[in-house]
Length: 446
Image 1: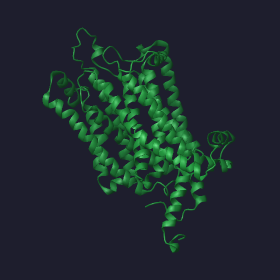
Image 2 (image 1 turned 30 degrees about the horizontal axis):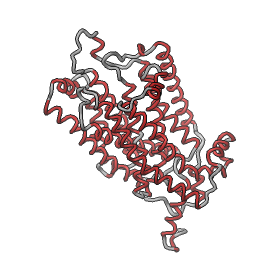
Image 3 (image 1 turned 90 degrees about the vertical axis):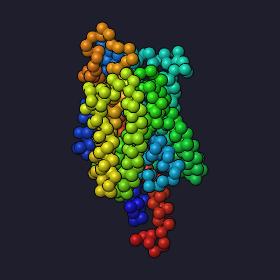
Image 4 (image 1 turned 45 degrees about the horizontal axis):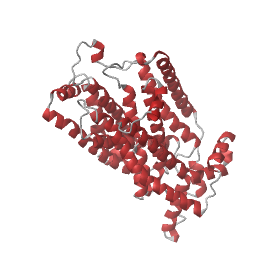
């Protein structure tokens, strides 16, 4: 069901203005800050002692850090899916979800960039990418597309926020002096004239068109970082489409989880309705089936040819050291969500939330499996290598830093929801007015 025509402008504003945290909100926020502080302490140890505090080595030189990087890059694709594709398709029902999607995208891409610097061991070496970068390197391609994607995503988050900033400036009694100064700094130039709206809409349309190829590029280039390396498990022409389909799935799953949380704790049932879960559920089923198809492609063809290097890699996944994680990721991340959401009862808010959690968790473990098993199966055999080089499990510092970056992403989303409306106010009012005008005169005030 769409937003009720009985909602007034004042009611929409009062419902959607940022709300102060309650007791649960404060516990959630302090818990995330605590996890971030533990991660910061672990990173201090890594900076002072070097990468020796990690369990990475000559073979597994990419570990949980790069798994996190690929996960963050994947979930950031949701910004282009919800904001760009749905806006350009004129899917008005998705309006309450656009800002949720964009803040997930921006926060994820920020921490994707940070985790790369963490993985380098010495952050000062990041300068070498700009001072001595070579355009022939896929690493440089990744830096370029990530920077471009971040800027476009930030603009897509900021421009639709301008009319809401004017509303928050008007209702300044609902905010603290610090927040009111922030709103004035960010949006005092916005007058809400027809000309400004016209320019803003044109700019948003251009950004939506631009971000789609950039989003596809960022995930394709990230896949090329692996696929251009001649290793079992990475030597694949399927990797670009494999990464993009997986990114669409985890991004949509992340939005579903955020929809449920904001709907429940911010009392947004009138704006994020069961209709939104129904439609997002259908989309998630389609994306799950698409990603499952590319997974079959990714494993069936190497299994059919069974070259010696690929054989060791696939046996490690299907029945060896990584089998438990592999089947967990496949079942929890794809199969069970499909079985839940393919039925109408499964597309209700609570089952959707459970399926979304499963998709996000399964996606993280899937990224771990993309990185680690391949590095443990190099083409050249591990001769005279210490026993610990044949296995990899992250040290507590690696876990703390990885969990700290995940908590940091959630903290950015949490602070954004406290400072700004998580559902666009002005767009909701406009669509409400359009809905009322489309009704017969006798029905408009019922």
